[in-house]
Image (cartoon, rainbow, N blue to C red; front, top):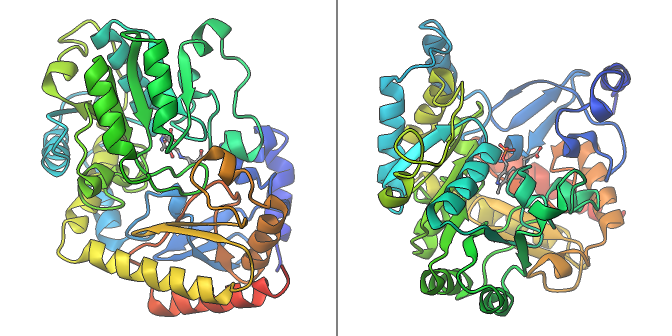
Length: 425
Ligand code: KE4
């Protein structure tokens, strides 16, 4: 596969951008090789600057649930751009977006738009601390909630990929306020609450973990978190930046029937443009400035282009049968890939259109079991697929996504490629 132009661009980029990338996992450091520099994308396909085209399962890490450059989304963004790109003032679009989110996510009485998932979780955390007057936070080892100081402790995603789950630069005094529990391990949460009664402001959790690979919640895990937090007066925050509008129009909380106090959103609600949101019960959100004492703000919050892209995406997702179609395609791909890779010890996880294959014979339920994965074998799998024109996340500890733009032919081509690559693993 010819990557000359990408290689030359990377040499140039490295002189001005750390590792030549604007987000660490894009550098391919854990899988080796040269990351293709992307020129364009359409539907389920992504094309690099050397003209190589790939079937895309990264989906820009989740947002592109309708595929790339969906005609209706592009058309809406173009029309919005002609009316100006940012006003720094309220717009009817933000009212429409709030209506869509509040109607779709029953636990969210109120919502505030921000410009990234990190901003959403950072704001939700500050609000939880301000509302409860408590300082401690519980997060789960291997979960990733963006690069928020308080949450870059035992973090997943890039932290797990590069073996730096605890980022440098976080003051000890702050890190101490973050308590770590085991995903799917209710006993570890109970132990923290019995050691710190009345001190924990919130538990923040990915209702389906997507940043240590994809790990579903065990039966009763989320319900247990709801019960433990309610009893102690702590808030339960669902980080649905990945799962929001991905595993159903009401997200994971709709799928599992849980009523969190706050929810963080991102990715899909921006339709590929920079958007995040946080929201929840009105009595909590009333503590946010300018109504209450918890400050939060943003120059581009509710940006008209980003909100237009997100709104257009959500209105297409509302259409009958979309999630059934994603479920059917996800199931077809998982079955085919499982058969193609038969004989190789793999733990295959899937919920709807999000999936992950862990290269281990150990059942994967949390960070420790995810870490038993053979990352060398994953790297060979990744490189083999890339050379076959299949573009998956460059880390064992990320999640893959099917979009409504993938065709049965794309899935069959992927399955055939897996069968060929599996032979060399
Ligand atoms: P952003 O700040 O990257 O928009 O969102 C942070 C975030 C928050 N919560 C969850 C559950 C997330 O998965 C993320 C970001 N996800 C990663 C990929 N797993 C983004 C990709 C990257 O870091 O380059």
